[in-house]
Image (tube, rainbow, N blue to C red; front, top):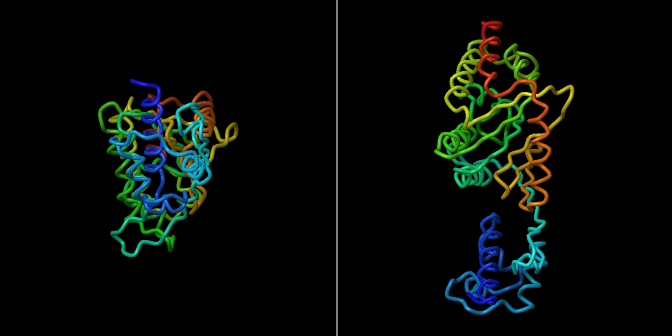
Amino acid sequence: MSERQIILDRFRERLTEMLAADPQSHSAFAREAGIDRSTLSQLLSHQNRRLPRVETLASISRATGASVDWLLGMSNDGPARTDIVREELSLARGELTPFDQSLITWYSESTGQKVRYVPASLPDLLKTEPVIRHEFTRFASIYAEQRIETAEAPLDMARAPGSDVECCSSIQMLEGFARGQGSWASLDHRHRVDQLDTMIELTEELYPTLRWFLYDSRQRYAGAVTIFGLSRAVVYLGQLHLVLTNENHIVSFVEQFDDLVRAAIVQPPDVPALLRRLRVEVA
């Protein structure tokens, strides 16, 4: 294969990668980049044998933040693109928001890859329906049904062959839930016990595919984030989400996550026993 063909193939791959990570349509992307929709289609076509013009490369680079070197495969520093996604009100209870739909897609695409996860409360893939309803009933912009359906995606992914999921939470958060402290005080006791039973069952079923580490929040702090391999990191900021696709940025989050793993005071094989002790304590 000629050097020209290698560059052309790499450009097509990276342009396709950016479009897949972009929530807007191809037409909207073309408008933002200042190129014709037909030109974009030609650039994506495997039948195309012409390298993009310098003006086209410059336009795409300005619109996306990706360097021309990266677009042509001469650099591995990915596009420094960060999207800010706001939670939107669904038109109907059974309708997912665009962010929910994207999240389900990202989990599906991550089947067979490593996903690292720091939840805002309990891990979504372990939550029971009453717990999700308790968390989201008070929100005007989010229906509990949305989160119930969305929570199925990471559980399906964790059950798929070859998947690899690591989760880090503070032990204080888990103890506070079991004892009905803070926001959990209004959750019915039986629902807390059922949730503990579900977590015992799933952590035993899914280990070692799912490895749940518990750290001491007096020694470490971590914000809520999901890291999908090295392709995407989603940082949760209330009803705003930062979606990062630059590999250098993602690696920084991976390093912070790995620091939580090293600092864990309860290792994954010991989590079911801890959950059983908490269940006995609050039963």
